[in-house]
Length: 470
Image (spheres, rainbow, N blue to C red):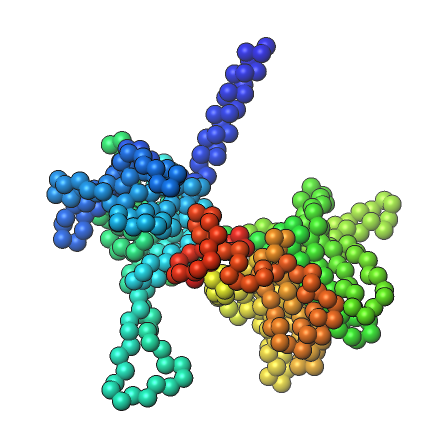
């Protein structure tokens, strides 16, 4: 009997390992070679050499062959989908790829800015591989005429149009020169082999990859809004018509009709001069599915009846072009009559890139109402559903999000500290002492090897558990 159990566990172990092995396909594999032919017909062959130890870390040597001569190109190491390269004659690592970052990759190079957006996955030679659309822009120095008097707003450099588009393929690299972070436009000129067996042919796979329209990204991953212990601080009107600060906090999970939900609690924050104690009360159960938020509520008023309402309240996919170009705009119109998605836009703030959706409703006398739904935050009026006013007077009474903060202190959204509302509520409730904000931007910043840094140079760093660009 024990032999059968051991055999069963052995088979299950193989099965589980195979599942997890498919999560991220490795770029660095012994016996893998990349053959790239440039526009002049010159063949370059990149291959994996012996391992080497640098600063107690193990790297794979990258060799390049050109015209029969083999030379050392650099050394790479890979960790959970992140690929770092230390080029020849360099004493530091660069982040070459981050295939573990499913929403987007942002790469930074000295002479150009390279950005990659996750498109989806394609089946190539029996393997599903993630595809990132890759573009590169460059800066050009502005030459002002002699005697020209510079005005406010005049810049030293101007960003030019993208050089070209290419693709980064999981396990393969940039479809051009695989160990450079710059874009290459000639997909068809790359082939990749593993122990002599062809695993990628640009010529055979170009049509599959190019079928994913560069101008119509299919966004398939959204940074979650709902995370345990995340807090939102909202300025709301109470029954007396006064502004109060309320805390909404996720505290654990609950299950309703076999749906796993986050439990959301609400608390009115005490004033520093108040002697009253405000209790934390259960507010709602919410669940999230890739950019879509639903609220579940139960009605158990009767001993014999139990009803559950399941209402979708946020859909960040509304108005986002898909690969089939089928765009649906009617969800918010059903939720809030007369409203629609005005724009889905990419924003960048403090080195973090996120999607922001603009909900609009046109009112009488030319009044236009808008709410903003931000990825990882929710609505900027009320986080858990769009909130639109009917007129200017009503707009003054809308709830206003002042702060959204994660359990680890990450600040996802923060209102203007100089605003009258912030000063009145955040300071009056002594919330400044509660907020887990880093002391200053110079502390708690690490390089990609996990070492704390005090002097910031241009590059990618880890701050508050997230990648940021400086």
